[in-house]
Image (cartoon, rainbow, N blue to C red; front, side):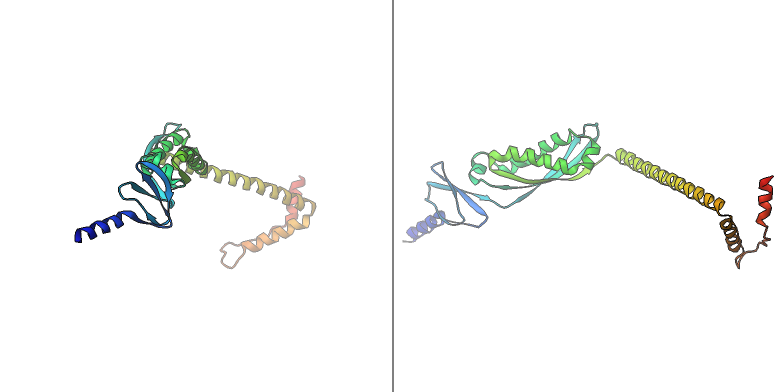
Length: 242
């Protein structure tokens, strides 16, 4: 009786499977696929049936840093992260031995191929375009496996120290150039304003006299140590005529 009970318990354990909401079970009967079952309670025929669990949740996969030579012959190290999920459990089990490892290896080779076709400036400035290109290529190649690539993000781009210094010098030179251009534009605008002010003073001599008095007032403040003697501005007109 004890032996019979042990056999019955073992048979029940082998027959009963419980799958979570995010899981599916691909059932094989004598080596032939019976389809994806679940979620919930499943009854398997001992010895005849075999079940493989497949997780349908979104999987986050880190792509290890890859040493890549860009199109402009700069050696860089790039890593990325992939978000994908299984949409067809039967294909994920039947078409590929290990879809996790296969997707990881495919992502590494695709990352090296795509980044190697662009130059460094494009990689740094057009990362969104590169991400979309990586996602499109990976999704197309993993479709026969029943895997859907949702998103690909290039995480980090490590540059050689010499390249970092060169880029820092380039950025500094660019900032200096912009500062000089802005200063020159300010001088040009100021010259237009001064020319306009001189023209107004020429048309209205009284404005020049008022400006002269204002300047005298600014120079003769309380803390000034210089003695100022007003000079009639009409004398300047006499010398101007001469």
